[in-house]
Image (cartoon, rainbow, N blue to C red; front, side):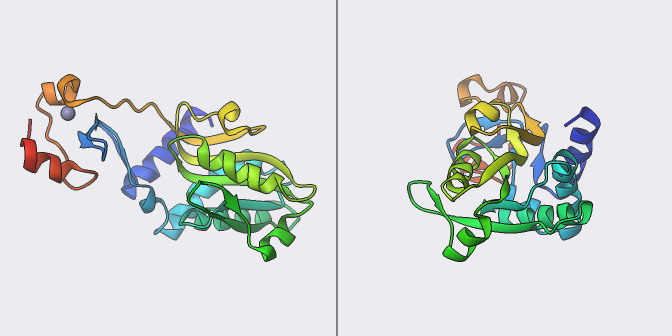
Length: 214
Ligand SMILES: [Zn+2]
């Protein structure tokens, strides 16, 4: 993703509230950070979701993708949008299937989807890749089916340490790469400059009830 595409994606994600930057947020771990991702907000505005998916299509339109695979959670909407736009961009129908995740974070496909994916070229997608786990395990599930070739992966937002090696993928499109750094209370640079803690997301409200604003 070149810089202007990253800027365009950042703009859309900020507009729909999925990405908040230059704030002061408290994670459930009670770490402090200036950036907060609300992954669930990537999906509700279908028009914006298709706009986001168009950047995945830009990266993979010439890879002859036949199936887009995601988790069966909200990210399936992203897989469907991507598959639809890939179909429109090429001459073949691209389908979207999803995989169920168990408590050990292993994925498996419904038998109907297993039949659809066999022998196909597969792209795995995720909304917010905080780490490599989801994309890596999705690819593993895809490869467990006969003659599947995983051509690559894509994440709308990915932390900087999520890369092709960690995901065990031949290529990875990160539409927006986050260089997130979290701090404990005592070394938080935003506390030291008395930046107001956002109480609307994460554990901001609980933290402020216990400790007050900086
Ligand atoms: Zn702080």
